[in-house]
Length: 189
Picture (cartoon, rainbow, N blue to C red):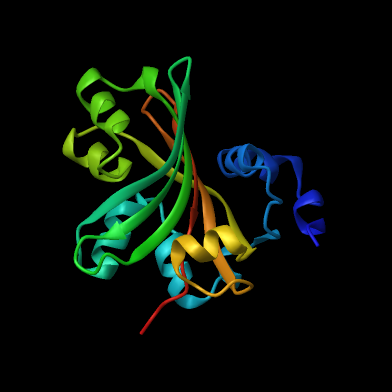
């Protein structure tokens, strides 16, 4: 059932490490994931995923709402923070993204670092608020067969195909601020 994940390239597996970390910690099988080209993404998902901006502002604009994060799990050691979150609309309380992120806290000033550790505001919003220069670079796009965990968090049916991206945020010196796996729910109308 989980053959797709085992057959992924070592490069894509490395991009998925923040997500893999939480699945291993929960001791549950990873969902089926396969790489897709940007051109193969459905139109809505391509608009929301295939860009070099942060997802916070992109999803905030798309949903016409400010966003907040609900931290589901958080682990920190040696100034590296891993967390699993759901990004939610302040207007509707709807989940607009499921994500797993790894951040190098050493690369942030103390003010933004304190807010990152508080786990209330999305990283993209904090980067904007503190005028932190960064570059966003999608490394891969993925199709994921929604499992029980993600279905419950995004309030979508188990087994549906969802799309996401593996993204890297770097500072002007080229150091990785964050590695992020971002998965969108299916659009509800």
